[in-house]
Length: 339
Ligand code: PHE
Image 1 (tube, protein in one colour):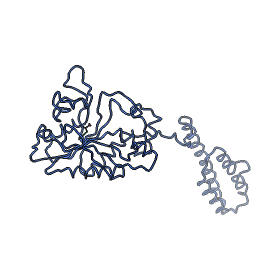
Image 2 (tube, helix red, strand yellow):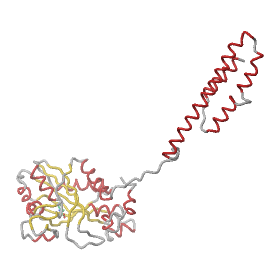
Image 3 (cartoon, helix red, strand yellow):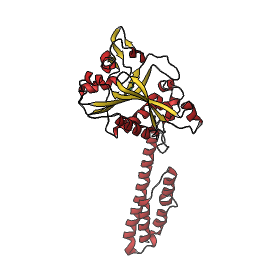
Image 4 (cartoon, protein in one colour):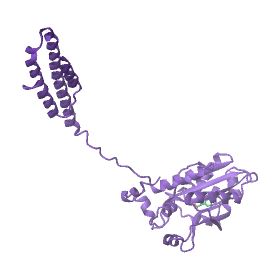
């Protein structure tokens, strides 16, 4: 019988409860009027004299264990209840955390940076409010040069020397002024042009321009670099270089990538030609190198520039450039799954 009592003690020590009802059932089972303890106390008179002492001690031990357990569990449940009162039900699932999305301009910009950084280009940045020298004159666009009209310019107040940069070529000028060749840098950033706002054009947009200057850089290097880029960016390696004009490069070209004519969308965005114009490029004009303190007899280089907004619109099927700056959450949320 003593062994049975010891088992009950062990059982009582192990007992756990989640609710008040469970604790109460436990109390009744052990300590209630018709509980186990009373049964054993009643047995006391039948125990042999030489065992009475041990029996008595064990039964008292069981009683104490059961009482302590009931008290401890009651206290524990009460303190839980208190916490519940302050914080609500702690076992409820949490509120879902709102996850933001990267802006499509950032997504595309990061992709471009990533692609060029893999072939050794670093990232350079410069001010959006520029002076005439860095935006125009150093780039072979002296005062009264007609090509200044290619980019309608916002001037700051009445000072014609201070303006909002019209391209990030200004960053390239700053970079050449402060770094010696070899130079491999891309310059992403916002640019401004005084244009009527429509679905297709805005008075500000984003560019990434690239510059590579070293000894013996040739047009073939430019073409190879562009081909690498279009393959990585669009999965398309067929490109076409159409002669063009930029004051800061000679020769200059527009870069078209062969997009294909498989789908309705291909037809629409390429106007039925299969080709898509994606950027301007050329060999840096020796005048520009000299303006920036680089010996044009020793060094040559190429430059290119593309619009991020246009590429983002293309890749994400965005029909109106204005959506990119309206901050409409319904639009922005659609890019949650992008990089
Ligand atoms: N800066 C030119 C633009 O904004 C792009 C360009 C960059 C063209 C470099 C050729 C070389 O249109």
